[in-house]
Length: 216
Image 1 (cartoon, helix red, strand yellow):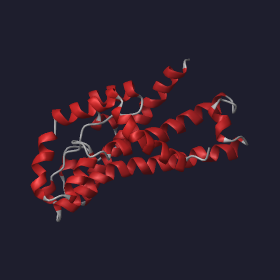
Image 2 (cartoon, helix red, strand yellow; image 1 turned 60 degrees about the vertical axis):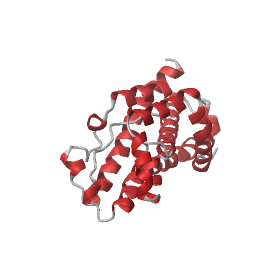
Image 3 (cartoon, helix red, strand yellow; image 1 turned 120 degrees about the horizontal axis):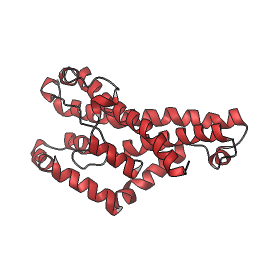
Image 4 (cartoon, one colour; image 1 turned 90 degrees about the vertical axis):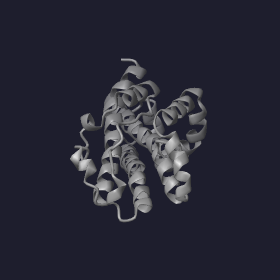
């Protein structure tokens, strides 16, 4: 089986888990703030079917790193402090991906203890087929979760970073963020992805975090 085919097979379950946990975390945070909307819409679950967005899944398979799910519906009117609470709810998604990246990185860093070989050897398949497959699975899991966390923290609507930034700005700026919600924002994001500008922006950050987590 070719490396690309194997990578796609590994990406699908890992990617679905990553984006499902991301959306579930948004819903759970909003639920904790007193908002019943995520639960009423059946989004307090890690079941990928509840969160699946066909376009986001296709983009995940094409880019092999970036994708998205259906946004969890929330109602800030239930929040005691809407601007503060929306910031917490928005950050919950990327935070869940960072936590998952740390978890999978810990497992990955344990492999040398089990195999007696350094990680850079395992990268090139010196640990045998089973260990190599485990390495690839964990490495992709770390990478996808870091990419999703960093990507979603960009201050471009409808990404989480835009809502975090909006929550720190005076309410007079809200109209500008609302204008970019929906198709316009998505067009900007897709253009950034396929022109390579997005990777130029987030690539160094992703590499920095990967180097922090993995002891190569």
